[in-house]
Image (cartoon, rainbow, N blue to C red):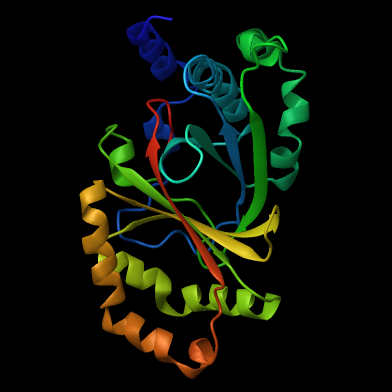
Length: 269
């Protein structure tokens, strides 16, 4: 497929303008503390370079995202793995206020004739030329203190932005609960003061390697990452928080995975 035509098609295919999908909270302010806690599906498509990346990208942009938007799942994030294992991998972030809608979305897509027509090449790929290698997903619920996803300010203008996806595993449920409490006791604010845009914070309900939590940060450029984390780690509020007796009597995080993601041209986040 002609690359210019592909990009033009995918950018035009999203069902709703990005400006209509962005959370109205000003940059730097916390997400609404009164809204319902969202649910998130974090989905990955493991791909091979070449045909699979093209056909999957076209499917997500022209078929899947518009259909999910029609179900009320929006804004949908779509990201290429830039730094991390097993590239190419496409990451999707699906936020929804309704658990029923989110977990039954795949079943409802089967009855969406518009979706099926647009998804034909992807859904009906022959056995000897599959559209993808494997799909995996996990289900998360938003933290009580950060109940709604917040879209970074540059998204509306299709500005430059990078995302960091971090997952913390804990050795016990007790430690997991304590780590989530640590975010609510001041860690949210430390991220703000460091200059990160905070996108979502989710507690994994279903998936591998439980108990764990996952959160997403955003910033302008990859070169800013070290400076932002330096500001975070040297913030007096953080130094005091991590030294407190409640959070420091033993390690509460046993493993951290850290990925750098770049939004696709059709991402709504």
